[in-house]
Length: 153
Image 1 (cartoon, rainbow, N blue to C red):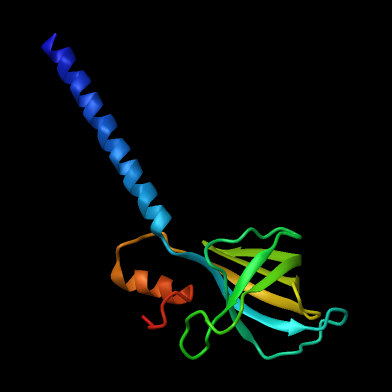
Image 2 (image 1 turned 180 degrees about the horizontal axis):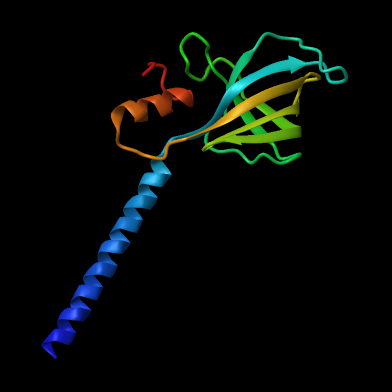
């Protein structure tokens, strides 16, 4: 009887520990830094002729890359690296999309119509996602790469 009670106690303790670890993992995942970061050019809708110099773009959080699904881009300050507060977000509707992946890094390139603008946006973005949290140097790099921190790591 005592041995059976001890086994039940051990099983309950293991289940509790696994539950705590699962909650901790979920909390860490929610707080992890994630975005799509890359470049863009304003282009002529019919010819795709370049109409601007390169601009740096970032999304806040993840993005759904589907034809006609809106994506919001934010301009990055090239000198400081942070999101430019003086520029409004760019609300785009991607058309042509091309995906690629090298090891764990995902990329998307595409062409998008932009709300309130006659020009289109050609862009190339890389998925930035923090897999490990709590290493100070990595934390600051991911925050900088997503435009959340202007201090370069």
